[in-house]
Image 1 (spheres, rainbow, N blue to C red):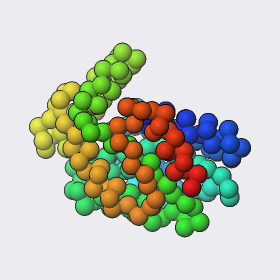
Image 2: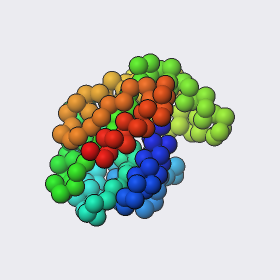
Image 3: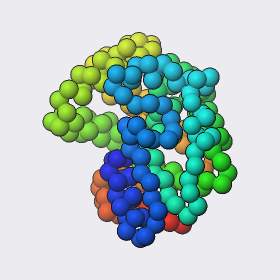
Length: 208
């Protein structure tokens, strides 16, 4: 629900007359994080280490006064998750987004909207089934990509089950990562059960 959430919030904030810039995960104009492309995905994962992650993009982040910039997925998913797949230890996975946050200008107020699922495995399989219908080439590609990573080899994880196991391992790590972040955040549990209410909570949190 990250893309949908960002789109809805961008529209609602704009409707209130606010100045909003919205960057989706794959936006080539996204000002922060690693480049996202199917061709470069494996290299992107391998480059995600404390030494090579491009923190300077966050250091140079500029947000105009009295405006909002919505950035999808880049803070945690494209740093800690890639690091986990690359076989980095838990300490490094937790430290990556902390270091990113510390590099952002203190003049920029960072707010993090966190979604959590009470049954993550069921949710992951639902997402897989939905994407299989819309994007038939996605699952074979993503399974092949995950099969090549150090995490998969270290845990003897392959195919769809390996992909799901990686996501579940990431779910457990994710909560510890969020707990160690020094920024304002809101936790929304099972947003799909009442999507309108979840969006209202996210909007109120953004405006406070």
